[in-house]
Length: 199
Image (cartoon, rainbow, N blue to C red):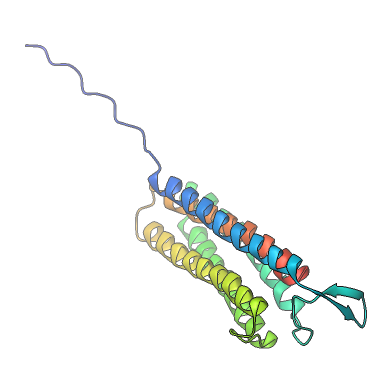
């Protein structure tokens, strides 16, 4: 009796990459909705006289000052994180474990720098959680971004341990890690512009 040849092996489905894409889409809708609420609250705020600019919306209390150097460094730091995460992908595809490990380490280091800058911003602004709509929305949006940043750091640690631990053929998690940092950078850019620049 003749037997049929075995079927070809099914191509990889890239489940981690697709799941990361779906998580990024969900995070985009979450932060997009929160920023839309922020803009609506700001648009509905009453007008008040400003010493420097005439009539302005009375949304952010006058005594609160945004430390712009720290917030700008967060944006610059996230751009550097994207470069480092992509360097990890580049090195992993070439089976260069030394440079991949260095890239993962720098990704985590700059990610921690962004987290540190956000904590510094919170302490310098001195916004009370229960002070009003601005205060609540400020912590809701920046707190959500902080959770996403910490999850990015955890994702980087998992990707680094998997790749450096010997799974050098499975590059999907390394690429998914870079995709997640791209999402975080795009999301923070919108947050930075709406919350920290436009106020």
